[in-house]
Image 1 (spheres, rainbow, N blue to C red):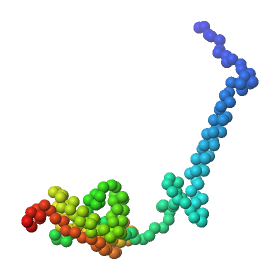
Image 2 (image 1 turned 180 degrees about the vertical axis):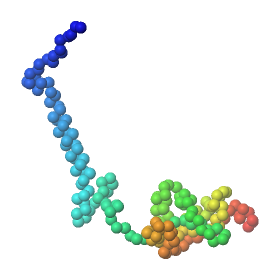
Image 3 (image 1 turned 90 degrees about the vertical axis):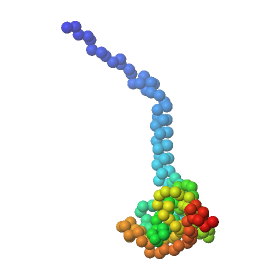
Image 4 (image 1 turned 60 degrees about the vertical axis):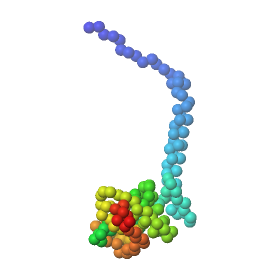
Amino acid sequence: MISSPPLERPQVEATETRQMRSPVWPIRKVLIFSVSMMMICLVLSPIFQMWSQSPVDGFPLSYYPMFSSDRAGVVTVTYLIGFDARGGHYPVSYRYAGSGGFNQIRKQIRKTVGRGRAGNLCKKVAERIGRVESGIETRLTSIAIVTATFPLDEYMSGDMRPVAYQTVARYPVRRPTDRTESL
């Protein structure tokens, strides 16, 4: 068996090693550290608003303690409800009130009621429901906009009865067959 001599590393002097290092590397480390520290300070900056006399809050940096602060024990909601001929009531989809997302339309309904235009909105929703040809909506004989107050603890426990309830507007649902019969 023939053996080969062991491989040897070339000897490099310490001065040559220092010359081969890039002078950019320490600058890059300082830059990375500086950017990291700036980001940490930026993320933590809203904390100081909590002790300010007039705090400024905004997206995306917010100091608001969303889940740690106490909330009111009741919530007041304005929504659409439909009634059938027997007096049964059913929730009406927000989509009949306008286009957009749930929270956006809910806010529009609340603003419309606040401006005193609930009757117009209720009429518009009743007309849209009147054109529906299938589903639970076909049983509805009137549409109402109501404002109800619910105790949160009871509501989340399954008791969905409001403690206060006010009908803001109500309008009958007229179907195409209703219109031809009256002629």
